[in-house]
Length: 480
Image (cartoon, rainbow, N blue to C red; front, top):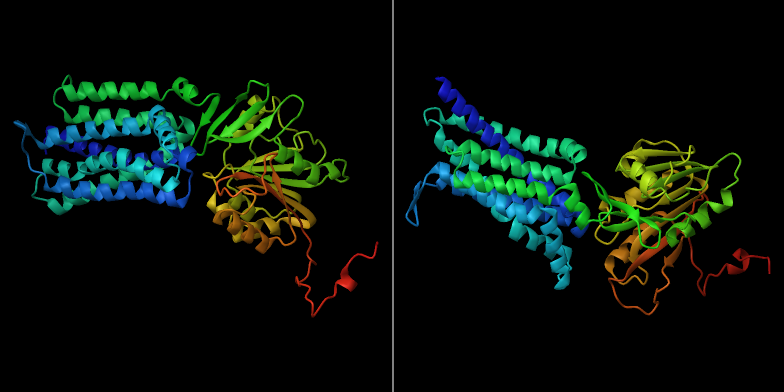
């Protein structure tokens, strides 16, 4: 095999690897970038995955059937077809995934009353994801035209191997390395650089129109997704990692606020004022034990801005949250000081932490529900609530903050309440909102609803009073 043939083969396999990386990375970027607008539920994720896989399958078939021919008087070879496909795919992805256009698109859908998450996801994918995936999917079968047909089974194995390697790198590097180290927006920019590299590798003329176009598009993508541009779209942006888009900074009234994926997460000022539901949770669970000897053990799941219990210097706190950047951002931009020595932060998913943790706590505060579109589905199940209950000491207190309707006006609020009560009997439920209307009939009017539970092992089996069997005389208080 000549040096020229070896070089060409390496180039072709490099193109296959890069294409595999781009497709998987695009899928993950789409899921991550749309979280602030449509959430991270399995329903929306399933639509995004389907919008990648089905066009990819049709792309494979279309690429395998392609034959060089004239289009509008111009002969389109396999090489030109590959180049045009990449340029088309890059154009769609530029408008679909660049944060400026992404934000404008979802704001537009809300402005015309398209608010259903499923419909929003389907429209977004149909416009911006299906077409580029279809054209990128043609890459592998088109590339096979450049290989000799004498050893087809062996070549096919090599092509599939390197394509899978590219997909593996897209699934691992983009999330575990690039999103974490560089940020989501810079990971997106890298994809445009890689698409520009593909065109350069394929085109024999470095100054051709496609090369110039894709290079300018990559440069424009870099500019549109810089830290500066993102801070224009999302004021006080502090991080944009694999888990969250985090904003933290002062409001006009001097209060410092944190937003996670566009949802208000924490509020704090120099007078120690916090969100009202935090104040209530502290009044119920923390104030009575501020001077406890020995100190009590308190678990906070969903650290947010670390405002819950911030002024308590006596009791021992463990904060658990998946995003390790929250602590530094909170200390610098919300609290304006380090969390106390009696406070410990563990960057870990909630269920993974509870599974491995053997401690029991006097107080557990659960605040992982940022909004209607950001409800972690695995944190509203009976099994998760059982994990929580197993970590409560006798007489321990659990306080939660759910974002649901106060009047049980939708199915989610009803089912969540049923699920919670199936594990925690005899709870208190309080709506935290001055504008709460008991007569309201709007299923979308969601509020901060605080659930309070005190754990006892001897509650016994619940029973009811009836006209036929009424033991209230024996069981009611004798104090009056």
